[in-house]
Every structure is written in C-alpha cells, then in structure tokens.
Image (cartoon, rainbow, N blue to C red; front, top):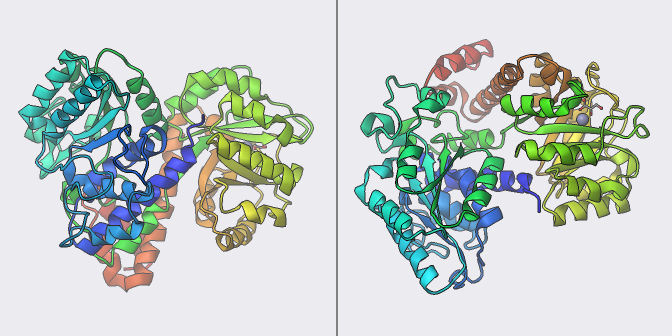
Length: 555
Ligand code: DX5
Ligand code: ZN
C-alpha cells in the first residue's frame, strides 16, 4: 500500500488550522507543541493507529497516549479529522463543561490518558503494554513525550522497566523540538550537548552533538532518529519500530516548535500563547501555503540515475520527479516502471512519477507496483472513463492522483468531476519531451484560467509547475498558484543541488511573505501589517519583513 503522502499532507494542514481556530477562540492554549507534533500525528492517524471513531473503546484498538498533555489541541484536532468528534467542537476548547480542556480529558472520545502533569505518560503506556501482553492482545501502544518532559525522573524509571520486560508493543515518539515551557531545553537541562548561543539551527546542523539517542540506547531501547516533519521518514520509522521485536522502540523526531508559521517557529513565546483574532486569518493563509521542491532527475546523468536520486536525497528535495517518456506520447524515451522499481529502495522520499506515455490506463498497475507515491497522467491520452479507472486504482492503493495538461491544452470538461479528489495538477510550461527548455511565458495567464476552474470545482490538491522553472520565474509561478515546483536543468543540472534547492526555497519564501503582508494590509492596513511583522522575533525575519513592507509601501 502507498504512503498516501498527499492525504497525510492535507490531514496535517487541516489539523494545524483547527488548532489555530480552537486556541484563538479560547484565547489560550499551546500552539507550539501542537505544531511540532503535527506530522507525527498525521502519519499515526493515517497509516498506523487502528481505531474506530464510532466505537472509541473498541477493546482491540491501538492506544495513543499523549504524555505531553498540554499539546491537547494537537490531539483534539486529529480526533476531529479522524471522526471521533465534530470539527466544530474544537471551538469549545477550554470552555466550562467542554470535553476539550486544556489537557486531555477522558470525557473526550479517543482520549486514553489525562495528560498534563508531565513525566507520567510513559509509565502509563508501559502499564498498558504489559497488560496487553498479559491478556495476549495484539494492539500497539504509541506514546508521544516532550523533550522537556525528559527532565522528569519517572520517565527514566519507565524507560528501564520497558527494557527489562522487553516491551516491544510500545513505540515512544520523542517530539524533539528543543524548547520547553520558558526556554530552550539545552539551556535548562541539556539532553544533547549544551546550546551556547540562541541559534537553535546550531543543534540541527551538527548531528555529532546529538546525545539523546545514546541515553535511550543505554537504557536498552531501539532508537530511530529522523526529521519529524518528513512524512516519508515518519512512515518508515513507524514501520521499523512496530516490526522491532524483543525491545521497546523510541523514534526521536527532530522537530520545530511552531512549525508551519514563521513567527512561531523556534520561539519559546508560543509554547502557550493564543494568536490574536486579527492575526489568525494570516496564519491560516500561511498554513495553506506550504510548498514542495521536486527535482527532475532526467536533467542529470541518464546513465547513472541512481546517483541522481542520491543527489536529490542529499539536496533535501521534498520529492523526486520521475519523467517517464515512451517515445510515442513524446518523441523521447527515458525509462519506464522497471527503472523506478530499481530506484525505489534508494530513498523513502516520495516518487512523483510524471507519465508521458500513451494508454496510461494499460500501464498504471506497473507504476503502482514500482512504488511511486504520486502518479500523474496526461489528459491528452485519457478520457473520462479511462481516467476514472486510473483514479480509482490509485485511490484504492493510497497513491497520490495527478493529472497533467500540456501548454496548448485547457482542462477538459470531463476532468472537472475529478478535480475535488485529485491531489496534483501538473501545468506544463514546456512542450513535454525533454528538460532544459525555456519556460513558455503564456503559461502565466493560462494559470489564472486554470486556478479559476480549480476554485470553482473545490480542488484541494497542489498545482505543480513543470518545465523551464528557474530561480528567476519560480516566484511568479508561486504567485500564479503553484505550490510544487519541478526543477530539471535549474536544480539537477547544477552542481550544488542542496544549495540551489535552498535558493529556490528562499525565493518562494519571499513571495509567500509578500502575499502574507498583502493579506495583513487588506485586513487591517498599516496597523495590522506592523503588528504582524512585530511577531517575528527569532533571527532576522523582522528586519527582512520591514524592508519588504517598505518596498511594497505597506508601511
Ligand atoms: C518535460 C518534463 C519536465 C522537465 C523539467 O517533459 O516533464 O519535468 O524534465 O526539466 P526543466 O526544469 O529543465 O524544464
Ligand atoms: Zn515532468
């Protein structure tokens, strides 16, 4: 079964917005720690946790214990998206009589543990796991603990106990966001090496400083260390943890507190603070504006695509764009599903397969079997019935569904009925067939027409800009509405893939900031622009925003 990467991304986007909605109305709550565990929760609820929202006490359900109970909005938002409670109930957060309190409360369906006083959740989880073993039950226990919480001695008692009793039906996830209540963990009680300055990126940059894993290994645990915001890495880590026998597993998920909202990220202030109502809509727009970079490997050494994939991994690509060409739909031939199958074991980074082939409906199963995470076919070689077959097959296999249109093709009427359920629309900005071509400028105004149709048909996926995308036009492509960006010659064709991807991210980030400034200006004029800019306290963001706002005369 696929990773349903897109489904999880959409789930996570929705839960972060529900967290903001609940906390803003409550005027109180913990966004920072809810956001740092958002992807952890998204992968758990979509791919690993067995539960029945209509029967929350089903005795064979897996148990999810939120030991860092203050992040309850992050739990409640996932219980809402999973169907345990109505999404609207999040608006009762922290109100008298509500089932959704500042810390998880057993009155809320799906809650297993009244968290809040830190340090206890792991012990409780050890008890659940031991009981399951005694009762010969096969359900799994997952518990999310905070890094600040590791200052509590009881955590380590539980860690020893779990190892002693070889509790392998328990997976702990450490939400390693380096911030606790009022400062950085490494300043209060270092788990890794001590943080000297205030620049948390120092802790991310140098893995040789990471000592937390050694602590858990010395307590007899299986340790898996990952980037806690990478859906594919979380998926892989949970698979490994749940199949490890004879000892408990902990996934040390390195995360960013407040991830997804620039002014909250790595800022201890947002451990427990509610956004102002006038700021919330700007945060929502920011949460809706996540973007992905997808290098196209055919722009590299076609005789050594394994190495091109490795360059994407080292470059920290969000996914890898695989241009399949059959020499019929386009004159060129690149590779087919056999090559994809060969490349698949090299990385868990999602494969974004772009099928420039005739009769895709005949071949789709081969590409499913090869292990692509997102498969896009061209409207020019489909009709409603054949695409309907492809759509359903991809959906059944939990693989992202993509549709592509050539520069001289408009979205066909038959495709409108699928727009609400497809995950990606590739708008080609070159004549398909090879990399290194120049962007077709008329694509910009075409995008306006396409976006209008997508909005009318409740498209909830991502537009992917593909063909001739370079640093000079990627900002405009973002403004046109694209959120996924293919880079062939502009990325894979360059020596320093990681450096170029970083530059792409920076350029796109500037455009996103411009859009957020505009939103602030539209909503509240210069006053709200200044108020929003003033929230950016970490690093140099505030000065960068002031400069940008002055250039665009918002202030
Ligand atoms: C063209 C492909 C594109 C191309 C991108 O048919 O679909 O993905 O490889 O390469 P650049 O970015 O160089 O146009
Ligand atoms: Zn492509």
